[in-house]
Image 1 (cartoon, helix red, strand yellow):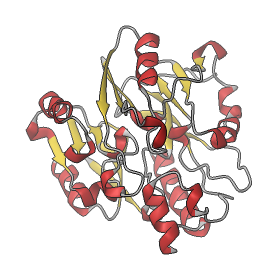
Image 2 (cartoon, rainbow, N blue to C red):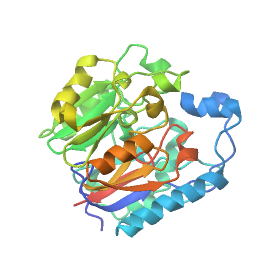
Image 3 (cartoon, rainbow, N blue to C red):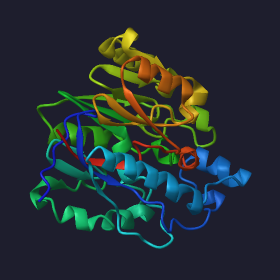
Amino acid sequence: MLHLHIKDETSRLKAVVLGTAKECGPTPLPEAAYDPKSLEHILDGTYPKEVAMVPEMETFAKVLKKYGVQVFRPEVLPDCNQIFSRDIAFVIEDKLIKANILPDREEEFEAILHVLDKIDPKNILYPPNKVHIEGGDVMPWNDNIFIGTYTGKDYPDYITARTNWEGVEYIRKMFPTKKVKSFELRKSITNPKENALHLDCCFQPVGADKAILHKNGFLVEEEYEWLVAYFGKENIFEITADEMYQMCSNVFSIAPDVVVSERNFNRLNSWLRAQGFTVEEIPYAEISKQGGLLRCSTMPLIRE
């Protein structure tokens, strides 16, 4: 049995579900794009191919295993994009919460049934249909749970709005001892530099007390300033609009002092090393063309 345990984003990782790029299917039609960055690459003819993405994910798997992490992979479904396992479910404390994802991605959840079978059924939560929530928007951080959301009246018009107010309230109800803090995110269907698809596209904690942030990803300046005050300005690496577009905040922590990052993130990786982190640089630029990166590809199950 797997005894789930996730209290933060950076404690040493013991077990994780890593997505797969195998048999991910052909380039989608423009009208089937889930986000503006994917749409941009579909229209430009630069959408990533399986032959380029599979080696990137296998390199990530090797780094995880190098640090002794137990790595689970989804059952491969033909013609199905299964890269972003963070979208389909996420863990807080000892509970795995199934995300209410876009309806045509439902089969992705079924592809991890071999993992779910190792979890006590009472520790798997299935939110009601009105609750929209995805793992990229949810960050357990000690006594807090940070959640990205969009509560505008035009929420139904945005395929890029993934977590609604009901999602925030559901987490509040399920974890009454935690302080749940929500952040309104900037959404765009057409401009990838103006779209924070999930909270981890514009914010992520690293180490014990540091964070990567992008101010324009937040709709409400006071909410951004709350994070600056919480972590302290001296502990924050502020990324530019172009760096957010490249997914610089979507790195992944294996331990408090070990961060997996994209090899082209020169400015970020230099800062991380200057703060004393070991940075495992890997190629992940092809996968980033789909609007997600390293954190999006993982579903941590157990941390120390």
